[in-house]
Structures are given as C-alpha cells and as structure tokens.
Image 1 (spheres, rainbow, N blue to C red):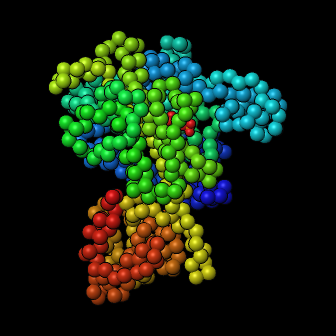
Image 2 (image 1 turned 180 degrees about the horizontal axis):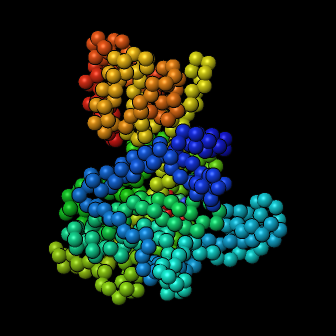
Length: 460
Ligand code: ATP
C-alpha cells in the first residue's frame, strides 16, 4: 500500500460521507474528525459485531457503560496523573514546535536542526466541574474505558453473580492530549475504544506457553485450572481471529508485535499489539495486555475498599489478575477502509470500490428501478424496498442516472448487492441480483430476496 493510498482514502472518505474533517467551515479543528452517514453506519456495525462476539454470544462476559467523568482519585491510583502516562517531548530551537522523542530521530522533521532537551508531557485532558476553577473542581476526561470497569468490579460481579474467570466489556469515548496526532484518524485526541477486561485467578507460572487450545465456552471445571498466562494467549488468538474472520483483513496485513521490556506500559506484565500494515508502515490497532493485579490492588489501596474476590468453591480469597483486550473503534474503521478499498479497470473504465464483506457493508443492497418514468415499475420497486426495510436490511434506493452509473455509485460505497426491477418483474415477480465483486447478475424471485440478503448480512 503506497502513501498515495492514504491520500485517496482521505478524499474518498470525505466525498462519499464516511469521514469529514471536523468544524470544516471554520477551517477544521486540531485533528478532529466527524463520521458522515456511511461512516457512522460502518462504525455502528463494527461496534455491534464486536459486542456480539464479546458479550452476546458468550456466557462469561457482561457489559458496562461507565461515565466518562469520574472521581479524579481514580487517575491517581491508576498512575495516569504521574509520569507513567506521559510522552517525552523535545522542542525545536528554531520553529519552537514540540515533537515526541519516540517519533523523531533527534532532529526537527521540518527544520532539520537538533532538538532541545526532552521533558515529560502528561496526556490527560483536564476540565473543571462546577462554578469555580481551582484544584478542588479539577476533573479529567477518561483516557481509556478500562478504569471504569476496574472500579465497578465488585458492583458488576455481585449484581451479575459472575464467577471468576469472567470478563466485563465496554465501548466508549476516550480522550488524550496527543502531541502528534495523525495520520488521519489513526491518532486523535478524542477517540472510541472497545475494551474487555478479563478477571482470572493468579497462577504461578511466569509466562504462558499458549499450549492450551481453548474453546469459547469450555466447561467451567476445565477453565478454572487456567492461569493468567494461558488466558493471555487465548485472548491474543481470539482477537486476531476476529479481525481476520469478521473484519475480513488478510492475514498477510496483520501481525503481532510483542512488547519488549523497555516498551511495556507501567501496569503491564506482558503485552502484544495487533498491528496492521498501514500505508505508512506497521502500526497498532489493538493491544492485549496481561496487567497482573496492578489495577485492583492499586484501587484497593487508594480507595481503602476490599476488592478481593472470594471463591466459594475453593474458599480462596485473592485479587484477580486482569487480561485486557483494548481495541480502537476508529482505528478498526480506518483499517477496514484501507483493507477493502480497491481500484480496477473494467472495459476501459476505472472502477473504484470497497470490497466490504456483506455483514460489514454500511449499505447491503441497492434497489434500482430500471426506469423512473414507469409508474408500475417504480411502485413495484418501492414495494420491494419497503419489504427490505421491514427486514432491517441496510438498503439504498436510487432511480437517477443510467443503470451503469447507479451500479458504479453502489460499488463506490461498497454495497455488495444491487437489485434491478424491470419489465419482467411485472410479469413474473423476479428481479436481477447483481454481485459487486463478480458484477454477475442472476434472476431471483423477489420473495426469496429478503431471506437471501438476511443470511448474507450475518457475520461468521
Ligand atoms: P499509540 O502508542 O499508537 O498511540 P497506545 O499504545 O497508547 O497507542 P493503548 O493505550 O494500548 O494505545 O490503547 C488501546 C487502543 O486504543 C489502541 O490500540 C488504539 O486502537 C486506540 N487508541 C489509543 N490512543 C488512540 C488515539 N489517540 N487515537 C485513536 N485511537 C487510539
């Protein structure tokens, strides 16, 4: 993928209504972006598929939606107010721009002069709540959804009567005062995460070997014998599989990046990033972390509350270890756009398209009456569209322009199917069903349409 691919994606994303620069009529705002009609649809689909995978289809994970603004003591306990959650910055003596030391090689990328000494810059976004602006009203926008889960561990565990090992999942916005945002939506100051925190019993082995090939809902008695390292390996594989099977990303564009000792975050015992081959190189879009008992121990210490778990069967009392899967919604969406975008030549003409799998596509089917000046055809097309709408299938009705142009417009937004209502439809109630990738057409009875499309819209 070339750097040009990114430029193309940025312009295609805007033109077709996936992603707009925020506040555009005021010349934009600090690397903020807005999701347009197709973007929000795609984002919702990604989140829904993640939620189905992580919560709906499992017996051992429950959901949560915690507040963005929480007691500031949480961020002290988690280490976010201190040096642990800070980037090292160095200033250019010439242009006075500040750069992240780990992103540049000692020189200002614009002026090419040596940068000054580095200093730490905390990434928390601050605000004041209430009428006075002083230390007592200081609050932070959460930099991750994870802490809302940790501090709710006893509430969720008791209310849902879940037994360790189990997980809590959450999707929501997070904020970081990033110094060098970009490219595009890869790094922004406001973003969305989909995170799952898995609580399990501490074990005595240091590193997992990944030798346990677990099934999703393996019997509880077997699962209890697993230690955090086994779960770490399990979740790492599960998450990688999901990106391949559900987001349809080619295996060759994905890799694990294990964190070396110098890269590990302040809380982590072990970590792997799942990386994608972006046009500018390999980069993270989900992290799998073995956080040990860092989080619950620290919150117990700072809050003075007992956060230990009591295992009724074994009569053990312990602070659970946490394995975290932390993905970015915006990065997953960017990866989806980059992965499925394609340009090809068809009969001497350029065709540009997104090859989204049908379950992911923001529009599943285009409904096209062959002509728009025939009342019977238009009425029939409207009837079929109505049926599709009632079946909650994402569709787009289009009657303007030649049929060829309309197919191209659907290709451009990645709609995997198009149906055409023509004169034969009035006689035998069949329509043509065209596939985006093969561009082949077949005739299908219009009553079979919804069941067929419905099946195609189901993720594996
Ligand atoms: P990076 O070093 O690439 O900024 P990170 O290692 O700080 O990321 P984590 O703290 O592990 O990221 O966050 C988990 C996930 O949240 C990331 O994999 C990414 O998908 C998403 N994420 C984190 N920061 C941002 C951001 N500023 N903009 C968009 N997504 C983000």
